[in-house]
Amino acid sequence: MKIAASDFDGTLYRKNQKVTTDDLTAIAQWRTAGNLFGIATGRGLILILQRIREYNIPFDFLICTNGATVFDDKLNILASHVLPAQIQQDLLSQKMVEHCQYVIFFTTKKAYLYPIYNEICIDSANLNIPKITLQEAFRLSGLIQITLFYPDAEETAAAQAALQNHYSGSLYISSNQCFVDITACGVDKATGLQELLKEQHWNHMPLLTIGDDKNDLPMIERFQGYTIESAADLIKKTAVKVYPSVGDLLLDHLTS
Image (tube, rainbow, N blue to C red):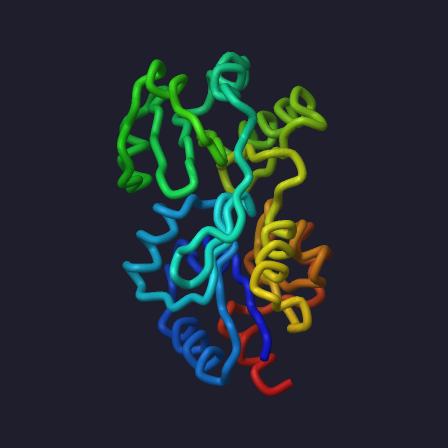
């Protein structure tokens, strides 16, 4: 029995093809053979479930909010890591946040959107979550992750670098596409997967990981993972092998 953990945005879910029938067929074959499949994503639970239900993606576990929350196949919480209290007030006072278009606040199973500007962009992101005011954002508790959305990759990289410098040693700052994600210190997709293996007593089972962006690097490095052809060069250099798709990875390891 083997375990496969796939990133979602940019890996299983690609802009041009979305989630393909071939990938879904490969996931079904993988699980029918007695293996386990799950998603390791920067999305919070409510946002990944929207896509899972849209494409009818089967799963045996979910690593959400970049490893800050871990769920089994019944959505029982196996692990969670809460951000420091009132971090939203300090974060939203930082200058680089002024340039982001919206902020998403994630609790273990819910999400709230605080729009800063550009409502059109927010609508186009198809985020089916409630909007809140700044005062409501300050009152939120039990936050697992805070996500900032920027208009382009250059501003995203600049914001990540500035936040890493400001919160060095106290928070973990990662990025994917135009999103900057803030989680508790020491939390990433690799630690989320390690907690999954421990809680489910799966440490003896081979684990395959695949992703395409910077927030996937911890799990690719820790578990000698894989990537896809559309990934950035940095990810390709780190990965053991590059595949055309998640389905190709699963089928390649189905009998090996």
